[in-house]
Length: 549
Image 1: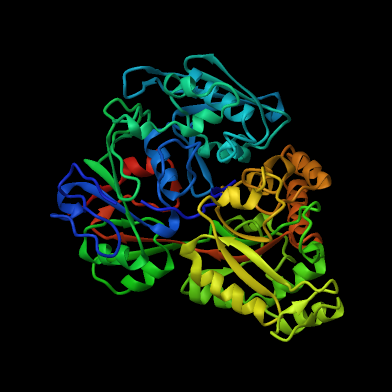
Image 2: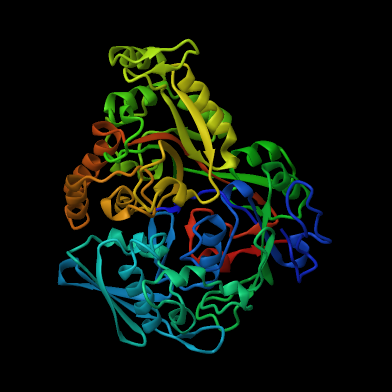
């Protein structure tokens, strides 16, 4: 599923630099580098705070954009993606047997940057740890192993992945998100229930042990992290002298750096950055079909005691009809996106039922539904339940999405519902409290970037995902049963029907999830760099990038 803000709940990153060409500082007032990235051979990549701070190089502990960039650079992956097309990476090829149940990967010989052998045993250990702890310590990454029963190293260069049932080869696209960890580094921290591994910080001892094309030589949680080429990398060596990954506290800070030429690539810079640099010399905007979805999740846990009216599907329908998705696209995305239609994204259109459309903005109908349910407006305009409780709800958000929260507040106020933003520092804890029981929160905003195969995304709302990435407290055994069945359906038409049914369960039958918008993937790139193919995901993208004269 998603590389998510799985939350992707926002957190951010300021500067330490060992390379004179990389800018110091961060945010709108960040000082420009002493020379441009094109002149220095350093690829300077900028991200905004709304995409999140890179809190660690440990992929089990951090799941935001910065972390996903870092793991492509330092941790090997069996395969990689070019759009939705699967390509080799550490695995030079793979075989399928037992009718699609067993996939055997043949690995290139290699070594970790500390000289230890890079073998199939590292991959097997990583996979088995993540399978064992899929619902706890590995909750942020285990989606990549959707449907996997076991992983074994047949020898140092052969990895055997066995699925619980026959799987179509398309499921292997999820493995592009499976990043192999150095067993000798991580295993000492993985004892007991596995929770201690989340506290492990590879960045505390640099350079980080890497099996990818780069290794980290400088790490700054709120600034610039430096990646230098890993000379022992098994694949094509990088064409740049270094990558500097820099965080800006707001969109305009990144836009200024792009215009000044101190940043070569506004990675997923988004619509605000694209709008700000429109027409600037030497820059181009690359927008591709959305791989993302923003959602308003409703707490559907039947054991939640307060605000019981939220358990009514009609109330959730009224809330959805109150939302002005066109305004969200125009104001939040500057037009670079579409109204929210599904938990899947537009680039997965073949999986979305044709009759599943975004709910219209129809406050009159929403008011009619709520009137019919007997929820009358009080003196302040907010509706009151027959029990005398105001229809006032908290929504868990992070501070960088204030514009989204303001529009949601305005829209729902029009139908007599009050929304109160709850800005959470620890997003997952705020949604699942107390103790993973989902008894406190009312609504929660979530934002995901998705992988091509729909199974991982739909798995977010399974009972197994409680306590980690399930932000609706949704648990339905029939949903889970069909979810498990669809992953082994080899007939494309049969599986498409099943995936459509799962979407309608979430979006129509229960309305546990209210899709808001699908943001186009927007990158801003300086024209003096080549090889920045934004549809790619994996080390091959980063090793092909080079500056041009």
